[in-house]
Image (cartoon, rainbow, N blue to C red; front, side, top):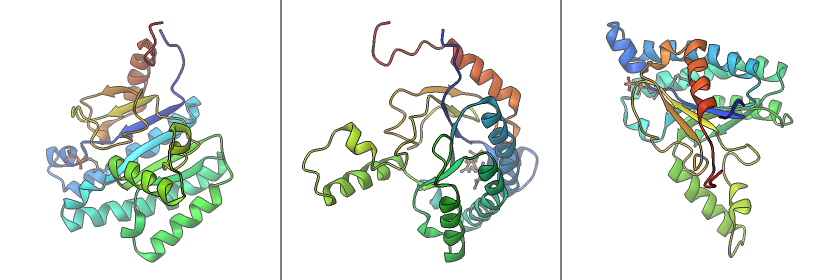
Length: 229
Ligand code: FPP
């Protein structure tokens, strides 16, 4: 029995498209409602005292989707950054972006860089947004950078400094919504010992109650990290 809350919780926010189609709406509306769910869960996570939260907002592989859908997700990212920046600053939460944001236009990239700059001094809490992200690419990029920096041989401690999550603890709990049960290239290195919770709830329907159920389940898990205790 583990009576502690996770220090770091991560969400694979799946099911926006299905949620919308079930209601006869366009997929993009599902993503908009996905942001509403994100906002309520972001507040609740930090209110509970969980200091690190990661979200999978767009995978590199998602770029195969129709341009219109990608454009919606880019717009939503822009709006979300504008919206949550005051909250990040008020609550001393660092913004961290994982992934390649060079697909965004200059003004969006500039806005994100400013938000990163405005919050970079906060070290105890972080919101990690994975956007145009691939766990495999992250690992390869880190290895290449370590080589470029002249490391002949590296260990975990050195390698982890090259990941997007440098100085952020590994996720204790990863939640995937919508009934899909896979990790989909998300935080591959960092999830080595993460507990994983799958729920059939579609992301736009995810509420504080759904999170409470996941946390209750997490508390029952016996984390051994390879040990026998
Ligand atoms: C997967 O659901 C979800 C995504 C690819 C995007 C997740 C994005 C959000 C929740 C909102 C955007 C948030 C930001 C910060 C940009 P899906 O569309 O694959 O659903 P489906 O499997 O039912 O089709």
